[in-house]
Image (cartoon, rainbow, N blue to C red; front, side, top):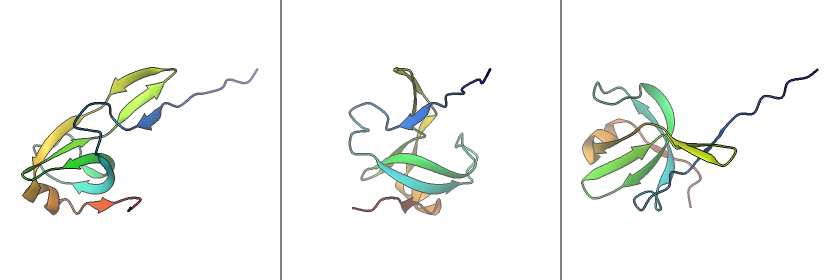
Length: 87
């Protein structure tokens, strides 16, 4: 008998601040950030702050949030962000 493993999908987070979020590849090496190393993240870049989310896990219609945090614009630029799927 074969067992089928289903992997949850990573989707764009829900919310008003995440509607304009874009997908970035960034490298985090800051002690105050819950992530370390290179990650694909959804980021909403504002005038002073950047709201960052790893995305939401979607499995069988259930949505669970992953880590979310914010950085100043200067700290975000030090993470070497690269926009994926440029418009």
